[in-house]
Image (tube, rainbow, N blue to C red; front, side, top):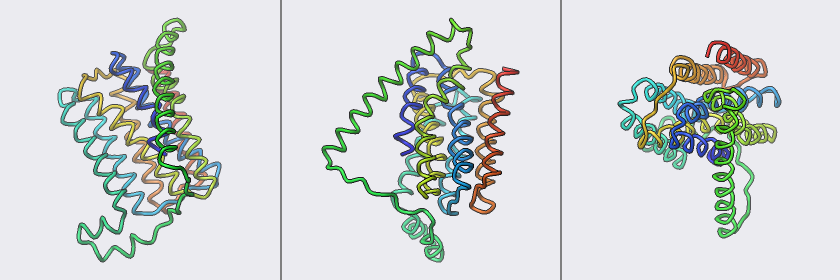
Length: 282
């Protein structure tokens, strides 16, 4: 769900970065990740009365998200090391996918931690409802959705870049707010829907994984081919704020493996402060 809902953000970022609009491309990823923490976690917690996850999933999902956020700061400040940092980000995402596929019990067996197997088996991540489609229907749906996502993202990026100068809106603001929020609406809907159906742990995973995918595919993948010329605002404010807010979200969840309504409101408040500071000083 995170990958599917992230497709507009990743596509928009890649299209902007490869077309030379670095401020817009970076703004989409950094702005989306900051917004995701406020909306996917904070707003979902407010709507549902709180989100709960397990220690294994929080360590895995939140830990990977923090590491990739730190790598993003490295890409912003050390553009000369973009290729090794980008490869490392993609490698971490690939390793995460392997860990998710194996599951907690098999991962612990691989590392010889049989003493923790029983702990890993106790999880509050309920099974998601199965969707019964034939393979042909599933493939057809994926192809159709991918075509519409790419086409829609291309139109969204081109329209925003064309309208921005006419309205006097800087490219970084277009990426950080306009495109970031617009492309994150599918993530918001998916996360809130999961939380309202009782799949709080899946909603938390969707939030952190959305950010991880944004960084690895939206910034890391293009960095293998083009240089990122980050703006002063991206280096000084956007990147560090994303990292700090990610760490804060993980810390809030780690206290009781629960994000209360009050803590969700705090994440929304942090995002509002980001918007105010970004628009006032940058």
